[in-house]
Image (cartoon, rainbow, N blue to C red):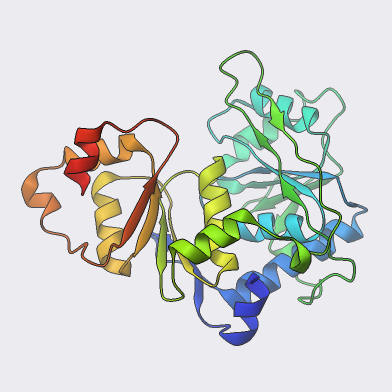
Length: 295
């Protein structure tokens, strides 16, 4: 199943709900936005195997960028938003990115890239919800692009960089399948189908520049499942998001568990989280006692 299937069947179903702002992107809107960006990338000369760097906080645009790159046969490279301009520039240069999509919230970092990149800025530079000299403003820059698929859709992939704890960050680059998206089998798709159901609501509480949040949220969207994206993790906010949006599934890291458990009992008990069915944790070991308390 693909985002497109849900966009055709139920275009008004929410694909993304931002928390706490409440901004909603429907499946129809996500499909159209991804297609327009894919047309822009292809029109700018990007071809299968090229890379698009993404420097954005959790916002309502990031999934459209990732889907656009993925269906245009491109590697998409999410970059840690806490990096300095010099640190981000290293990843952009190392990945040989032909395009970068950033956000107004990170304008200072974007503005500093030019002097840090040994080969200059990528030819395609887009800033969402902001303006910067020499950068195209999004979504205005795609207003004239078709909202239909590009003619030569082909599967791209995530190009994730390590945290750089042992030297420079290292890119984990897998070979592309050279197949249309509809023909690519995916283990994650099977896991999502097994783990969730069509009426599920998935909570993504962590930064989307990390591997698990980006991969799991995209796979849930591919399965036609609404994703609630926290703009920034907050322990009580996570409980509120679960209660408000009737979240059924979520993926956390253990430190998030401990922060929620440290909330006063009165606060924790004030939220109805009975809709929650399954939670997965990753990224670090979780003490058995913490897991028992969460259960």
